[in-house]
Image (cartoon, rainbow, N blue to C red; front, side, top):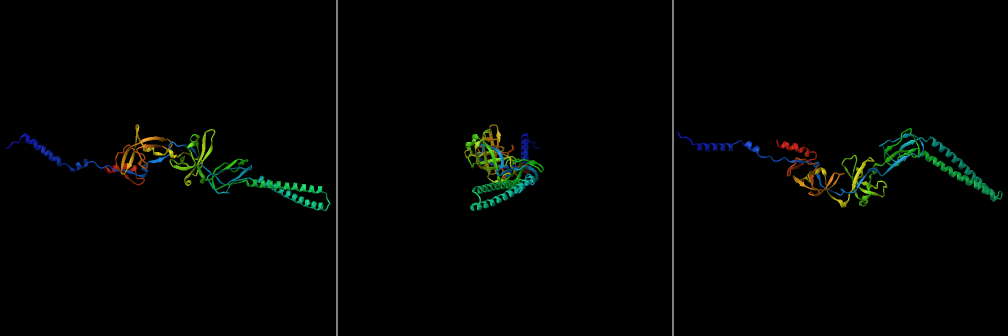
Length: 385
């Protein structure tokens, strides 16, 4: 019998173990290989484009949206309110009845004025006939010149009284018409000040009518910035109640005098698109006058990630996500925008609201609106299973 040496036995065992290792399970080796990363799904609402603006540092305008055509209708006669035909928010056409006042006492005055006019007319006609006879008699030498002159004086006095009576009748008729308050133009009733049964005096405010189609931005700007303003300059502003929606217009008027108390100058900006203007007056608005001398690249602050003194953005370059360092400039607190001094170019697309789980060089995939970053995590998790 041949006895195996210890060296041979060890060599045989090593060869056997090596053979076993090569013939291991192929599924385990395959599972150990890395899988490609799932792409980040990006919809249009997940991206923001780097833009250019001349608003940062430009003059600030504070004011409200007001109609150019507005009427504060007031009582022109003292009377009791009998009818309120239109209420707040109702549309009216020019000439529509808004308020009717009690005209009883005024109609009595009109009747009296008409009677006085009739009497004055008869008196004038009579003095005219008397004067005509006196002239005939004077020509025949039957009365003196003094008698003729007396007849002319009476005729002239009757003529003056007739003119005064006509004026009183016209005034009384106008007073009757003023008991009916009508819309001066097509518009909307914005504020009703009285109710049925109220007694109003002359000058009492009754109702306000505005034309919603004539809305504009009326604001004030510091007199210190007046030298930077010119008619026709673009204005960008936001309106309270419309969220982050931005409206644009142009300077249409700059007042020639500053307010002696606030030292601010009144100005008016017309909407570029009047169809998009709010239909409600009095809404607070704030904006800036755009200046060509101040144009710079800007980006919303929510797209910028800060790390200590440095800052970067996640830029979409082709089908990849790139981490790009940027140099920041002036910040606009009102608009939430920051000047990008370097690192980006006009038109670059960056993530609107980046998170901390992003990887430089990660693949991205463009998807339709509504199927973007919100579904990227579930999609990646599903792909990794």
